[in-house]
Length: 143
Length: 134
Image 1 (cartoon, rainbow over the protein chains, first blue to last red):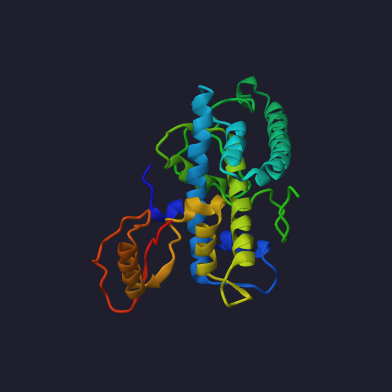
Image 2: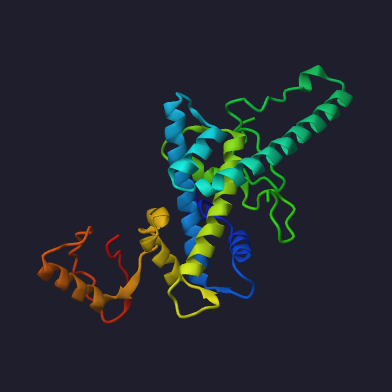
């Protein structure tokens, strides 16, 4: 999959909004600062991925899981993130479960056992299925 | 709070698909499970907030009502937690100042960690990005 340079950046509007939420009202953010933070965020993702990967390798796994990411945060000295992340993860898992069940009900109504291809959460390679609320701009659909 | 405020009802604002692209560009080539992807996206948001608020609080800029590039680069240099950003957030100084610093370092007999003796940037007094030590 070819990566265009802009694909490694995060959307400006979202970054700006997140920054504004963190600062007192009325504080301006220079364009240069915004762009620098955006780059920093991308670097953060790479650093976190690399770090999480070390934990996965230690655990002899080829797939990064939640625990690896949390361990990475501690390793990177962002322990302060761990508690809020765990909280968010609980909410996220509940949402995902709710979606799965909604799909299962729908499938049952369609009356076909073969359609129940839903995987469990613990499945290693969930790359193929992106459960996002916003539109998917995935270029690869491995399904 | 697990939910983001500011009119957003979503759990996470950053698009997971984009986060995934960045993660996949990493050389390790591992797969990423859905929970890990979500956590990375969420962690990145927390990181952006932390970097912004820390830099604003500790910024030495003259502007009290603005967050500037120099606040960020100052943070990368001074705060150990953010030092991994030092290379991408270099301080900006005038080329002439940098050259003077190199001269001084040579005289003092101590070279900084970056043994950069490139004198190619002999421009006029224009601001350049130089990774000045780290």
